[in-house]
Image (cartoon, rainbow, N blue to C red; front, side, top):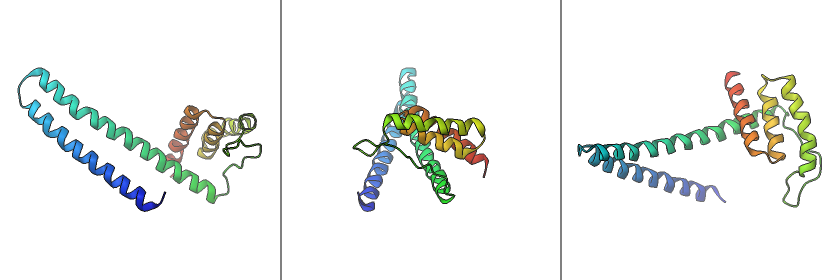
Length: 150
């Protein structure tokens, strides 16, 4: 997909979100000024739910941005792990080989628990082993340590 298509899609999504937020806020204001307790409670939910959605989207964007930063730095240092083993037809590491390689990265975190690089590599190993929940947790830990090291 080229950058113009992606940029256009993002612009349309932002425009749609702003339009929805404007509509939601104007409707919430009408309900809020009504004086009825039930309508006021509903008005608050109309405003709070989109704010929570924006916060969650912001959190994911930060996660992606920070992960990209860490990956670029680790790549520049020559510290990205290279997978040696079999791959599936889709190009992913085979489950057995990924599980075997995982132990090396888990030991790296045990030896250096305050090193964001070790946590980043562990996150990649979890992803290769198809454990996305733990992969994201390891990357979040790497991001915390990365932020503290700058």
